[in-house]
Image (cartoon, rainbow, N blue to C red):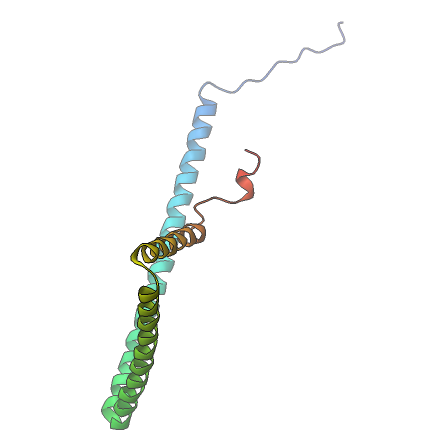
Length: 140
């Protein structure tokens, strides 16, 4: 028994754990602030680049219109073509809605409208991942 040495259990100073947890929380807060600042800078920089590029393109277009009048004629002609195709599409939609409205009675038309609205809402919820279909929720 005399050969055995006695070991003294080392205990941390009072408040050590509290101070350690406080430092960890402060470091996490600093890291979160840095990430938020970096995200804001990236978002602001990307937006600035996007706006700058758009302004540059508008300036180039304005310069082209001022120096070459045929560019303005081409723009108007292209816009007329887009407007024509949009009118054709809207006319087709109107013909389809009119045909459905004359074939179906008001009750069935209302039922079809509600079904379409419900499907759109369901699609929006699925796309927004509201149902949380992930492995984190499987098995409780």
